[in-house]
Amino acid sequence: MPDNVPDGRGSGSQEKDQPRRRQARGERRIAQLLEAAATVFTTTGYTAASTNAIAREAGVSPGTLYQFFPNKEAIAIELGGRLMHEMRETYGEALAPVDPATPLEEAVGAAVDRFFAFNCEHPVFFALMHGPDIPGRITEEHDALHASLLSRIEGLLSSLLPDAPPADLTRTANMCLGLYKAGLELALAHEGAERDGYVQELKNVLVRYLEPLVGGRLGRAPGTGP
Amino acid sequence: MPDNVPDGRGSGSQEKDQPRRRQARGERRIAQLLEAAATVFTTTGYTAASTNAIAREAGVSPGTLYQFFPNKEAIAIELGGRLMHEMRETYGEALAPVDPATPLEEAVGAAVDRFFAFNCEHPVFFALMHGPDIPGRITEEHDALHASLLSRIEGLLSSLLPDAPPADLTRTANMCLGLYKAGLELALAHEGAERDGYVQELKNVLVRYLEPLVGGRLGRAPGTGP
DNA sequence: CCAGAATGCGAGCGACCGCTCGTGTTTGTC
DNA sequence: GACAAACACGAGCGGTCGCTCGCATTCTGG
Image 1 (tube, each protein chain N blue to C red):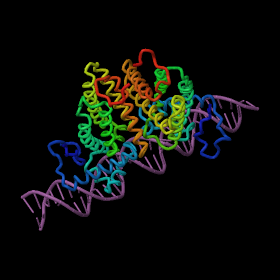
Image 2: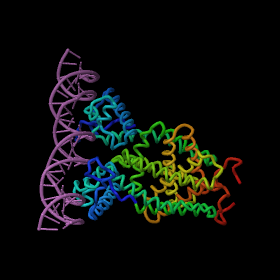
Image 3: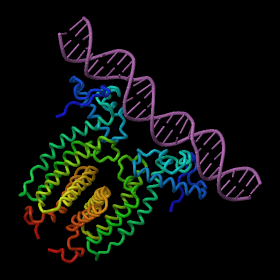
Image 4: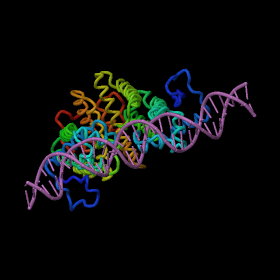
């Protein structure tokens, strides 16, 4: 785990040889600031979020914030990095086992449930990934995660459709991810039972979309056949 | 058609009794400014777009811009209004005829094609509706269009599913719209044959999602049955 | 043809934002 | 306890942005 946050004060000479010795207090402040940033980013979006507001939310002064982060972008990058790390663990569990014996409905349902739980626990994730107002560097992180997710889905699909052209596989993976994001947005916009309803609909969409592709390759729940 | 744009100079006393007599030159400038705003909004988004940039794009001074629009928000509102007007005409054609004899695939395909053509002709539309960075008033217009679209889809669905609970109908309509937006985003991100491929996949998603709901109520293309 | 309205200009005002800097406080080390 | 490094503060700098104002120019009705 890359615990070394890029320094704020070291104005650009050394980067790797002087990792800026941190005290326990500093690490706590960093976590505190990232949590505050997550809150502000979630409510106002990245561009509209002011560093002063983040500092205020964290209960520190603007100067203190810049003790630990060289600029506003670095805050989002570090936050995105930690999120991606946790995400990798989550969807590692969610998408890794391509057990070809489980019914499609179960596989899709389990994957959606895991991803959805992650997005509920980390609302910033959606805000950072979905926002079209995000400048330069963060896009790289975004693209990295996107590509990573996509290749996972693609791999999963290729094990179900070994005889499909790669281009179709990529397109199908993109569709799945896009459909998930759409369903996620709808589900997050509702609460309680209604939310669960949208999650179920999302699963229906994905299952029905993929079912004709995998054909009879995967098992189907008994009683649903013609 | 509401041709009266809210005045810029009349600093807030009269609004309806003094519609600010316009010359032909003024109307031309307004159209010119809206076109420039559409360009800038499309490329940079609403919040990042500066009024000076819009004026520069239109080839006029900032002061001239504020002769016709009281503030930046009014530009987006007027633009959104005109877009909504044109949209209503388009999807009036796209969704109005609920001919219960046409196959589901044809109906969905035609609707998607019309909407997609509209979004290709007016890229601003997607930028204004999809951006999470849009302040206050515009959201009202957005919600109005959203609700309008939704009730149309809902009505269309209810004619196919007369015995479904209203709550399910609303949810299904929301899903359709969300799925369309997701597919639109993917299609717009590609070009040429790849774009067409995504459009086709979007149609597949919608048809397969709705097919089990409408059951055998609508006709199916010959040769696709079991 | 001319008075007044509509249109056009662009320097610049006030507000805010990202970020800095000088200074003061806390913490770890000997 | 002394010294340095890390931490904390907050006024404020430079810059941008939305928007204004005074004034010049063009159109239009009588």
